[in-house]
Image (cartoon, rainbow, N blue to C red):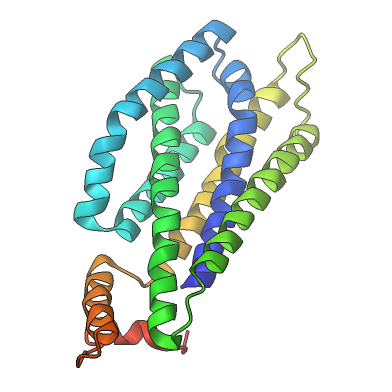
Length: 235
């Protein structure tokens, strides 16, 4: 499960590096927006996202970290496919930005909390507290993902003949940005959905683990019922 978290951290930030680096060019070339329209859409979507962060946090508490993260990745797949298969209007582009910002919020709320969950499982099983090490490795992989994503975006723009210095927007530039901002992120988001499905730790597991850990530290009898399968190495 910790390895899966590292993969999620790396791959999501790969997606983020590509999406953030190509967002402006996509709005100008594929959506046909002006710089002013693109700026308004991004600003409005950011404001809406900020207003929705608290309710999203409530959903995470109610339904669990994995579940909300999974659905945010599913939304990423859908929005990326929309960007690939269509030329969104100003409103649709703004909605895509809201999804981009909200999924980013969910990810950053969840990823470190999920690391703490897995490190608690590791400590329960081995008696060793490696929380700092485990969190720092995952954090490092998120940095690697963003760097690689931004580097890859430049390569893709060259590959698909997208020239930001050109005064004429060609069909290659329009189609190229739809692939860079839509098709490729859709594939990456699909990988994240699969990885999230493979991650086993759920809300009920952590509740049972917390109770057992408290009893264990107090020297009292405890049971691993409810999370015993998570202690297995057969995965």
